[in-house]
Length: 120
Image (cartoon, one colour):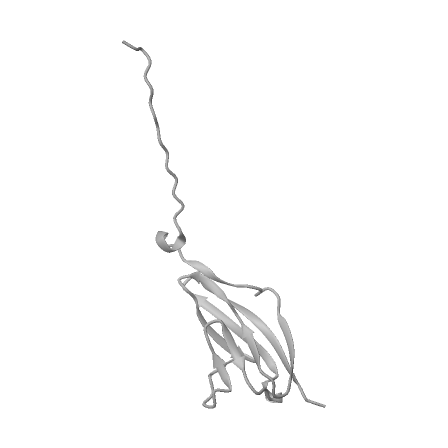
């Protein structure tokens, strides 16, 4: 008889993504730490991009000078989850635009300073 025996222990480690483990992850916006300053000519168009992630997926909304922006009936302003498109810019479109991403774990924002320049 063999007086020696072997005990084989197997350890398994699993990395569980937050969405499976039930933990919420606060939203993150690429470049949110740096404001963007943009100048555009009168009558031109621009897209303000705000790409976010988090768990659960963040809800996005846009503000102009601190007030919520709604898509207007002429569709001159179009909002999508990650961008806001402003078409046929007017001098009155100049201002501070903010995208806000919110979920159960928190919120974060990114600021854009838009200046519409008159044509010479």
